[in-house]
Image (cartoon, rainbow, N blue to C red; front, side, top):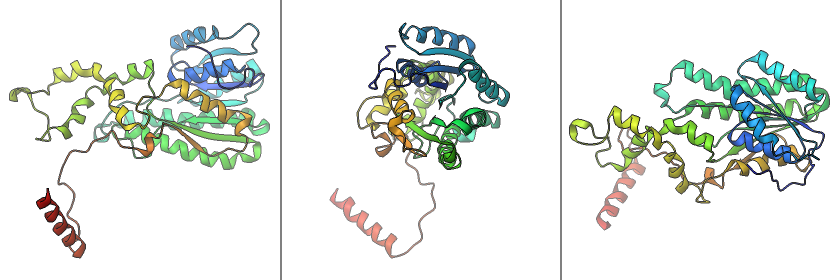
Amino acid sequence: MAARSVFRSGLFNDRVAIVTGGATGIGKAITAELLHLGCRVVIASRKAERLEAAAGELSQLISPSSAASITALQCNIRQEDQVRELVASTLRLHGRIDYLVNNGGGQFSSPAANMKLKGWNAVIDTNLTGTFLCCREVYRAWMKDHGGAIVNIIADMWRGFPGMAHTGAARAAVENLTKSLAIEWASSGIRINSIAPGTIFSKTAMENYKELGPMIFQMAVPCIPAKRLGLPEEGTIFSKTAMENYKELGPMIFQMAVPCIPAKRLGFPEEISPAVCFLLSPAASFISGATLKVDAGQSLYDSVWEIPDHSSWPAPPEGENVGALRELMKKLKHKL
């Protein structure tokens, strides 16, 4: 990972940031750019081994003349006491907290009807409650009296999040939380904004989404005239064995997203980190309560989620408009 930035070197000298989920993917790219800009960064994550490895790698990006530093602190953001200790430890180390980047999160693929309450709660507790706890503890311990800037990383959930309804609900709630706190905490000199990445490729995401392989089957249904999958006894494709074998096809989810992105390519973590640094910087001094979409226009374009043909919805109320549409469709059918 090369340390580079469009912003001037030293922009964040003498500033301190906490980045949750800072050891991988988008969080790692954010940390790298903050370090390049002279920031003292505390990265937090549940997994100590991964955290220490990332800190070691990222420390190599710091030049001897830089004011930047990196510290790894293990923290499960779902645990209130651990979040409180993360904030307290940062203050003991650095004496201030200027920036908070809530990037920590997690989810798994599942149809909503199959989700167990335990799994639902785990995602809500991480993506929503964890973000709230980090915001609240930083506010109470430092920003209430000294101000600061917060950026919450959410997601492209503007048209729902089929297959991951739990994270869609949580991320939408974080956007509303962002707006609420922007008003409540404005008098303390705190700016708080959200960033909604589009489809972002990273090695970590590719590994995490291997489980999406089985969804390839579900997404194939609209392309099958029978509108269902074949079974082994019919000499066709779906079986438990095939589902297991196709787990490695999870990365194909990225490929399938490309046609729905106006840029016709995937985004990368290094295209999210500059947006975060902008919102933290003095250049965004009059921006608060906003959500910046970094998605190449994907949220304005088509949907990757196909709905199979069906006739399950109730018929519309009879009337002249329904009759007119039927007549129109008959005429069009004859022309075709």
